[in-house]
Length: 149
Image 1 (cartoon, rainbow, N blue to C red):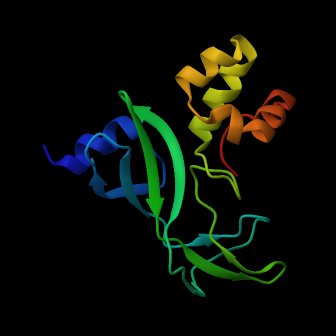
Image 2: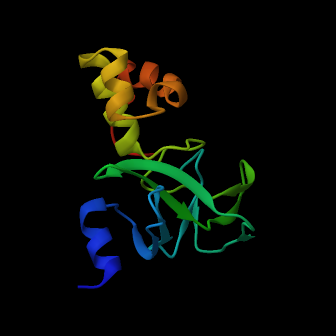
């Protein structure tokens, strides 16, 4: 079985394919992904287009659920689009909310844990989750937990 398939199956991230995996040496697992979509979506409205403005020069990163005892980060070189309403923006991704450094799976885990456990437990299961997802916890408790937009 190929390493990409081995990582892709437990991640189960819609709309992307795994193109590289960096297991490192005891550090976080970094998974390079690429979009399966040929069209780009504006992260602020419903506008979609097949025309890319350009490609960002740097990778975007999102904290994902741990793989075993190791942190997992998704990395993707995103395209930019020219939205008629919002101008030039980086494309939306199906696995994370706009302007978030976390996948919706990770955010949903932190929200769920926060409503059922104390801070020590949340910090153990999702290190850094409370410190960085504080606004998302408040939004999630308010009813915004669910699919990425």
